Image (cartoon, one colour):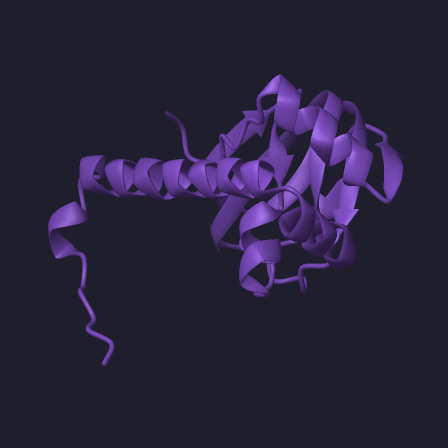
Length: 148
């Protein structure tokens, strides 16, 4: 299991394409979204590859992953309503299905099984991120905060 590895199965891919408001094509080395940019929706990679990464400091990439066909990018930020926490750049020309916030809301309201699959993918990503943090040499210094 890999962080940023939100890969949809064939059935979910088909549903996402059906609910998608538009198809997007981007050339290699272009940017799909930047870390800190307000989320406006998410994408399903139909063809091609993209690189997702965070920057610890300008120019120093951390948690970098290359993802391809069937992967969802931007979903966590779309669900949370927070800005994108990653930057997404095109590695190899891509074709994407774009789901706006409205598309996503329609999908969630009309397709309970798809909603459960998306929640499962998000849960898997959280578990993978926690496992990666635990394997990190600095994991013993992690801070814990309690919210009332």
